[in-house]
Each structure stands twice: as C-alpha cells, then as structure tokens.
Length: 132
Image (cartoon, rainbow, N blue to C red; front, side, top):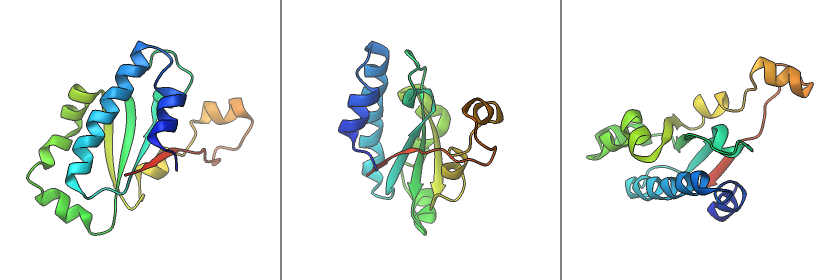
C-alpha cells in the first residue's frame, strides 16, 4: 500500500499537468470517502509511469463483499458514473468488488510490454494501491 503523500511525491509534482491530475484525484477521493463503502483505490495508467503529460488517471475502487447492494442503493451512486467522473476529475473509473476483476486486469501486461521486458505473457506487474 502506498500513501497519498508518496503518490504526490512520485507522480503528482513533476509539472502542471501532473499537479492538476493529482489535485483532481484528491477532490475525487473526498467524494469517494463520503460513501463510506470503499476500502482502497488502485491507481494505474500513464499517470503512474514516467509519461510527462498523462491525460487522465485510471482507477479501480475496491468495494468489500456486500457493499455492492449498498452502493447501488446510495443516493449519490450516479456521481460515480464513469463518464461523469471522467469529465469532472479526468479519472477513468472502475469499481471492483473484492478485487475480483478489474484489479486483476490492471496487473496483466500487454503482450508487447511483456516481450519488451523479457517476461512471459502471464507475468503480473505490481499496482499502486492506496487505503481509504
């Protein structure tokens, strides 16, 4: 698990584009915490690479066990609609109950990346996870 301070230090300060994305992430996390349902967020995509000017952040919210029914019934559930989150925060959002799908998907390397790194196609990469 990483801390938000580590995320900021490593990925959110290099330039204005990264600083703006990091500020968006903080604003988004304020909304996410108001739901009181999610345990962590996985941050991925070009934001967590050395790309100078990523256009967005890929993120997976981890929702424990029975939280899905509570999420669907939450009065502000619509605020987590992917297009709305993308427009307002520049975050491409996925929600994953118990790391059962998207969290695993983000660990997989593309075939060309695996070949470039000299590892097998089933090699998993690490992901950046922050506790909420």
